[in-house]
Length: 144
Length: 144
DNA sequence: CTTGACCCTGCCACTGGCGGCAGGGTCGGA
DNA sequence: TCCGACCCTGCCGCCAGTGGCAGGGTCAAG
Image (tube, rainbow over all chains, first blue to last red; front, side):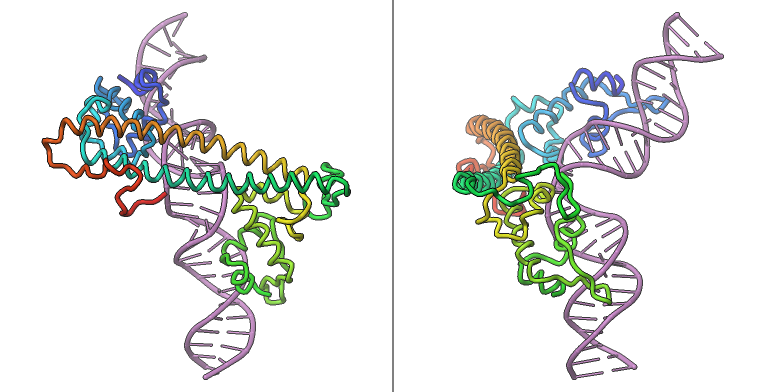
């Protein structure tokens, strides 16, 4: 099977497959003309990779699953290493989410205050340039 | 004031200040020797930039606030354009958070299943104590 | 005169998973 | 014989905000 067919049946692009290969996640024989030649296990492998990626792991994480990528990862007995990786990644996700939630809350609060201030200050013609003539070039080197 | 001093009083690095300048967010006079020479408003400006960055905006967003960066952004009457930018960024943050939460939930579910399967497979003496504490991962070389 | 602190420009690296392009080779069918 | 589909390698770009380095200039104090 060549790269195009594998891409079709796995639902990813040839570009991705080459990327996975470059990352050492999949391998392929080479035909005499240099074309990659995949066997049927490649599809399973790629689907497993996608499954792990979709679960929030990185390609780097996936590399740790190499030994079992040819089996049914979803149904396989979980390896301690795999679980550990998953937990680490989960922690990363959690902290990243928490950070972004904090940022969002700050922004939301700022906007809330701004909205409140707006109501008050709409009596005054807010001299912030952007208000009256949004299309006008600012004194400074401006763009929008 | 030269870049080092401005960096000190604003709490960011000279590197960042040069970056902001390259992005068109701050400006400086130049001394005869080529050194940047900032006036005292620069500190306010930089602090405003940091404030907006901390609120979750990007440097690109901040550019839209140029006309009012010299005032007290936090207390200033908000411009509609600024609010609009904030709302857009808020929406971006929201969707990004939602996506990551979805990923996290998938991963958590997978780990949950794995943990369940593990109970069966606990004939192997594996370090799965981690499973019990999904929020408290292995405090090792782990970061975002 | 020398040291050392500071400044300058400009460029690469990083994260992460590709997209896209350039420039070329290979192959089957009309 | 030519077209078009497919394949190859290799490199840049993206998002964002720096960190870090190279290689140099400037200046005041010792």
